[in-house]
Image (cartoon, rainbow over all chains, first blue to last red; front, side):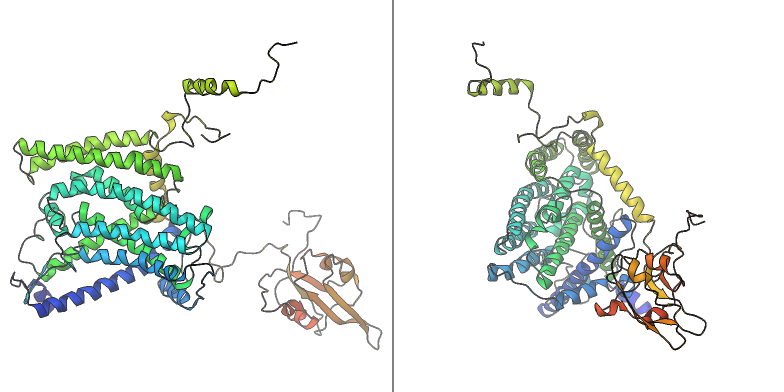
Length: 427
Length: 165
């Protein structure tokens, strides 16, 4: 124990590691992330079922190894099941689609920093697989690839329900992607950079973006639910209307890949929310973890902190799924285009103006009054916004009520064509 | 606007999405943290059956291990689903006994008439329901199998005690 404790306290040089060590560590990180990710997705299916069961006063899976081995049993079942290929399907695309929906979620993890850098004896190791400078743009690019898997699956199945699910998901994901992208612009405005590690350190030394940019977080949260096709936005699946939509025709492991992809997307989006709005791996109320020397202990603790945040968001996903009912399609579109997008745009303008104003007033970025100003503004904005949302003017009823004048106008237009029931002259 | 859709005028004052959502979330969280798990864990726990439960048949036996049945033929006559097959036989002393007595539990509707009509209190419907089989033939219980059943038998409805107290 003491050896490990001593090893964790070692603070190495802050130099770049040699190529050999860097390569070795990259491979280790690669394998570690992949393993944790896959295991996590498997365990999430169990967590989902358990949480749903508890919310509904049930027990949930408790047979295979007290329930813990349920994901393995599911996996084995999916491997030995028969793969069905619809005769009318476009086979190459049909087979490719699950993979296409699965890989972008996985690859996104490459750029997310998950812990403080580790200053090993042989040089400092960034705890991110690929510390690319344009990290955030990479994520935006990949997240828009995710829709292809679903669309191609829906189209290649040659099934009307799958097709409808595919079409719905295209419309939904593209609509909400805009709001998602727009909601992150204020984050970039504050950080002044698209590198994710810079966004994290900006939050670590200042305030978390959830306080600075609460409305951006709100939009990001809602849009990410739509992007991952989770309730209340699971219209592409819609068991009741579309027989699970785009994966109606899929069976066995190909279906399972879609299932895993959904959970992978959830993990990725949760990690993104933690990184962009909740300070990434930053431990709150202390700067100790952000400053050199970078010891192994710090790396482990920050990793734990990051995991906690991600797990919280994953729980939130499930909690909301088992609470809220599904939106109707027109409500979904109205919310996306008429509410989220204008709100995101207005918020960019407001935040930019506020940052410039505060700068002009002499409050430097990162200073306490600067963040106080932002927080005050957000508090007011959140109160006003939620008052409006609460009143139910955003999500429309079945159809808007025509007002009296419009009805009269319509009647006047149609009056000459109305068949007269009685002869005008009378008897 | 689609034709014939009735639009209910929702009072704005009573409509609240945020509060409704938060109430719902609090409700589910309450159940999540303190679930009233009401599911019966079936193979381990079993719900107790009513005394008047009518399930798998059982043929009662005399003290010397023979079936009480005297092959009078009342039960196949009264059986509404025609699931009892009875071939009567007679021994040297002139006592009637069933040569063949089969009940097709698949056809049976578990009305309990056979038990009601039996003058010897031989055939009974039982307080038992776990009678799954791998084949249809397995559901046809012969006399030996009916005698081998050990589950408690149904206490039929008593007009003098309609609530079974």
